[in-house]
Image: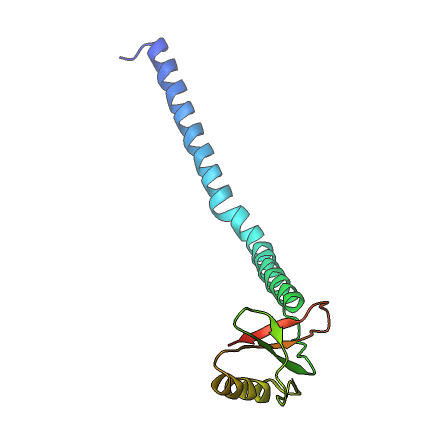
Length: 136
């Protein structure tokens, strides 16, 4: 026969066990089903918004970094002697409109005058000094 004290303690143990089980079931149901089903639609929209924001930020940064190349309008060939001083050779064409023609002439000059070095230079629109494109 079970005494009153042991019956009360058994009743309290069962009551605590069922309340813990029901509370854990409630928490499991709340965080496992209720909150995700209510917020899933909003979380999908927020995720899509974050992805679109990242794509937009990448596109804007790419457009700001990608500057159009401003090609020079004319190219010059400068001749340097063995001491590295700029010198003038009579009869050589030194101003050109296109890069390819200037490079071709510079290669020809290097073959004709092996003791000289040649630099293909131009003045860029936003630069104060001449920019060397090629040096032979």
